[in-house]
Amino acid sequence: MSDAITALVIDDEPDIRELLEITLGRMQIETFSVDTISGAKKLLQEREFSICLTDMKLPDGNGLEIVEHIQQHQPRLPVAVITAHGNIDVAIDSMKAGAFDFISKPVDLGTLRKLVNSAIQTTQITTEPRDAGPAITGESPVMQKLNNSIRKLARSQAPVYISGESGAGKELAARSIHHLSPRANNPFIAVNCGAIPRELLESELFGHVKGSFTGAHQDKPGLFKAAEGGTLFFDEVADLPLDMQVKLLRAIQEKSVRPVGATGEVKTDVRILCATHKNLEDEVSHGRFRQDLFYRLNVIQLNVPALRHRQEDIPPLASQLLQKIAQAADMPAPKLSAGAIKTLLNYPFPGNVRELENILERAFTLCDEDIIDAEDLHLPESAPKPVSANVSGGSGALDYYQRCLEHNSLDEYLEEIEREILCNTLESCRWNKTQTAKKLGITFRSLRYRLQKLGLDKE
Image (cartoon, rainbow, N blue to C red; front, side, top):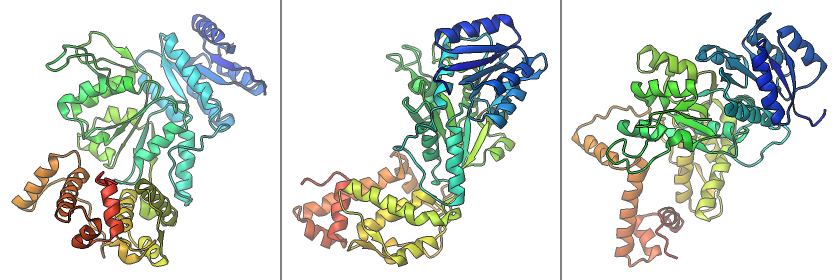
């Protein structure tokens, strides 16, 4: 195959064809134009192309027919569809059928050039694999299927809705899609929709101009602009308030945002990925999530399986996590005994991979030798039920909950308690670590690890 970059343009409007030919020609792309589906199919049989741009309304059919034809016969050829302004439903349908991306009329030449460059880069993804970066460990059939899906999705610009239980690895899946995509050299920004105060959401996402509200002392670009050219990942998207769902919908449809206090909109080039552990279909049926936004976000759905559904992946995943934990502590990684592995395989992991990592981190600090035995895991005899979002149990539970809210996370709150206990005990033992470990009833290894983790190791 020649190294020349070639494009197939399918449009029955001479002015549009000429505009695309001139623009692509200035990008050193050889262009072949036709005005019918039949003419396009004939050219596709005769030669190979780097990209295809097709209008949706053609004299002898619909542009979706070309998208489906290319998906069937040349799946690695990226196809971008040209739609009438505001016809987002057609664009969504085309991406569901396998289109790389869409562009609306009147065609913005800057947006067109970005789209074409991204599309051409997708053809290099499988021939130039990236070895380093986010990866989901697992050789089970469900994980092989997941990783194959991730590689395919990396070649598209379509929004992806990632579903799965809490702790299963939804953000890692999103990072893997980004890492394998032509956007990999640009930012990946994760937004926890439930962690940003409601009154700050619009400013955080879209930015603001100086003086637009009290405290706006300078312009702020917002996360959409911060992710320019890259990927914006909305985690726990179901937690978005309904009024912000409307504004996010418009940003996705128009590919532009309006900063708070601004008079005009700003073009954006980001790929949208989202995830939640909730069932979005149920949220829609109960009126808590907009159906039109769900339709835009759920162009392609990717499900990350629960850890209990891929038990054969637990031993290699546990080994990888132990290496990570030990490396962070600058200590040799212990091994799991046969009994420990058997115990892990028999545990249902309601908290999935996140729970496995927490279990191994605790076992790492408690094991006396370089072997983690079953008793070091301290697994409950029966798996705990998922924690309800509602807080009950008397004033003690409420007080505890209130103290947790003063911190960014429960982990941060627990670390503060642990740091206080360690500092007090070290002071009472005049910083004699051996005596401190004995007084706390933990091993010296465990003490050393905890000191390093909390930044208290002065040596």
